[in-house]
Amino acid sequence: MNEMTQLERLRSEIPRPDLADLRAQEERLLAAIADPAPVRRLERAGTRPRTVRRLRLSFAAGLAAAAVAAGVMVVAVDSEPGAPPTPHMMPVKAEMVLTRAAENATMFPELHPKPGQFLVFESQTMNTVGGSSTFLARSKRKVWLPVEGDSTGGFIESEELAPSAYPGWPLPPEAWENLGHHGPEKLGDFDDRVEYLRTDFAYLSRLPTEPAKMYQHLYTGLTHGAEADAEAWDRVGAMLAEAYLPAAQRAALFRAAAAIPGVTTVGKAVDAAGRTGIAAARVNPWLGVRDEYIFDRATYRYLGVRSVVVDADQAKAPVGSVLTSSALLKVSVADQAPVVNGH
Image (cartoon, rainbow, N blue to C red; front, side):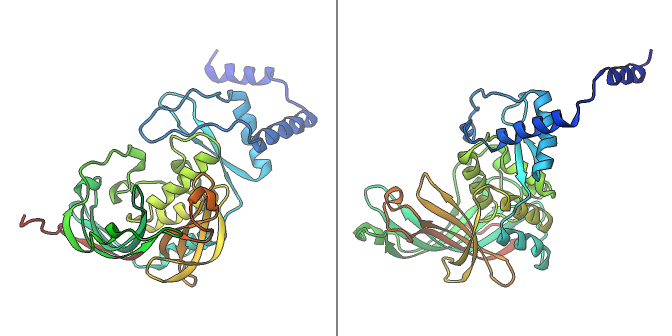
């Protein structure tokens, strides 16, 4: 008896469930999807996740059917080598700003960097400096990142601008100490990001162009729950700030990000260079801020990012205060890195 005949006999022995049973199973599965109780801790970069309860194969098969009925797409994320994947649902519902940005992704001139070259990012930034002295540091920066390789192969040149006071705090004298021009110099001495968090062009250009698979990539190594969603949203920012994706991957990223739970639209947002746009945003309840990715209102080209206080107790600053912001001003390609200390 050949294998196909055996398979057909096995199929014939499996009773077909009636419609009532299927509907009952669907209701149970949808209730399980909607239940936020089994929130699991996310895996931090470079660490192994704790053992979690896994879905049985029969349940996973039913989950896929129920998900289709619920209007969601199912993707799977590997959370541990050799372990069954953790299923993630990419909702059909999508935030408007990121959807428009995806639709317009091919409208802009495309860069085609080659191995051995550098992508050059020019930006203006404002970041919170903590510790014994808290203030907002402002700068203009130019960063060279290799087309392939981590940030240890990069270089930076900056102009430190006049600082601003952290909302509700006095401006400390030491905030003025590092003003002026710095560099060019080496960007970093180490980069311990795991493989799936790489943001160099060579890696990003190999990412999926299908939104559901890009959604899967954003959740690589994560389990379920609010922390996983917050981390996925942060990963979107890491792929936008000083990173460059081809148009196809960029469009897939925007569509995937638009489906992350909790993403909303902010009608007016201003980047670090003073440009006003519209933003896709998500609240981080642990920090008490709303992280916003800002786009041009007419073209939906990415402008920058900022974090705005929504919980004064958590952020230790008045509601509405801007604690970090950046503006991506220009991206270009260079054949070589800048000269550092005569070398």
